[in-house]
Image (cartoon, rainbow, N blue to C red):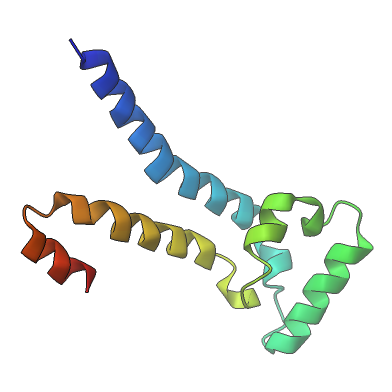
Length: 110
C-alpha cells in the first residue's frame, strides 16, 4: 500500500544526505584555487589575495552566492570544511535514530 512512499522517502534521503554535500563540494572545488591561492602559504596574504581577486573580477567567486556564503568564513586552506561540517551534522542527527534504546542513544550523543 505504501510502497511508493517508501521508495520516494529513500530517494529523497539519498538526495538530501549525499546529493547536497556533493553539489556543495563541487561548487567549492570549482573555486579552490581562488579560495586557497597557490604560493600563498601565509594565511593573511592568502586572505588578502583571495578578497582582492574576487573584488577585482566581475565573475569572481563572490559573484557565486554559494561560495560566498559557505567558504569565505573559513581559513583559505580549509575551503572544503563546510562539507565536513554538513556531514558531521547529518551523522549526529540521523545516526541517533538507529540506536535501539534510550541508553545507547544517550551514549552516542555524548
